[in-house]
View (cartoon, rainbow, N blue to C red):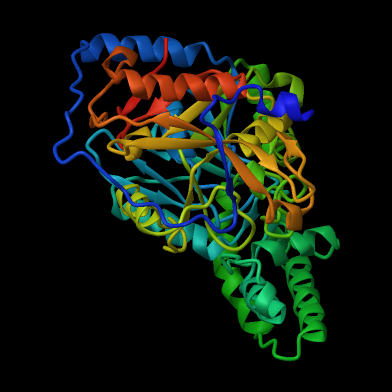
Length: 480
């Protein structure tokens, strides 16, 4: 894109700042912010919201548009009340989703789809997911203790999904140690090595547990391959085979041909919701490689990881925080440091659901958001955690990058080294003092908050239709 096209949307007060070493920002907040109270009739709002969800069509995908942790689980949990099936299609237990029920009770999910709180909804773990079966049952046991029974008529796992073993976790740690100063910053959950086994065609699939001899031979081959590769690899494969004799009996009732199941459900008119894990900027092909996940969290990965044709998708919702966060290593152009970053981290509780790691904090990056929208074809944007920004005197939006060559661009560079060297062109917006966590309709939001949302729409060309103003299931505003 040309320099003029890149800077055209910017106001006169837009400024260029280094994406690598911004000086610390001091947070200045209103001492006693005004609280935006809901004045709309709750029953009328709920009825309007239900009508909105029905407009999304028979198949809807909810995908992360940034570096993960955008709040996808909350929207999926809300939409799951209106859908017959909620599916996961890629990633594994490295994806942590936090959801809340109507009473405000918190649930931390890792592999189980976020539709599990809807008793009428079937949750599907698709063929593109890598599954660590012991961890799956630990998660099911935790849910049962919390009062959520997960039986085979509530959850099914694809027979084509690849299995993740403890040996993959061991390999993950050994591989990360080899990288020394160039660590990827993985969760060390074994996700990458499990996908590597799949790609090299020596993986073990969930359906293989129904054939004990085939399963044992496959696991022995995996262990032998790892032992040949790493001198420090230690793994009792015979003990693991014995352990899985028990797990095989437990998991068998959950195993289904999910490709046939999902497509038959679609043909029967059932509504299908896809829950993306991770996010586009961590996509193996489109993210900040090599600081990425090991699967494709973009729409292409949804189709291949579920076996559902692309022409069946009617809505694709991109979930984006009103600012940005990132966990692990890798370039992060709009990153903030200092007091403001610390304050936003604490207010937004920006710590990983799966790992507990503190997240890096940054301003909203529209260059990255537009890149994700281009790849996925977003029909709507769900802008989350708007309430976290209340009280800031001003907000910055990254609208373009100044490359080391001096060129200004709105295209996201493929070269990760270049991404790490760009200077960000920012547009500054006034902040708002009001606490918006009580708002439930658009007119209850302060004008400056509305202007911030509409500026993002202007820059992205996609409607920011759904606005998160708090963690609760009801804490959402639908923009008219």
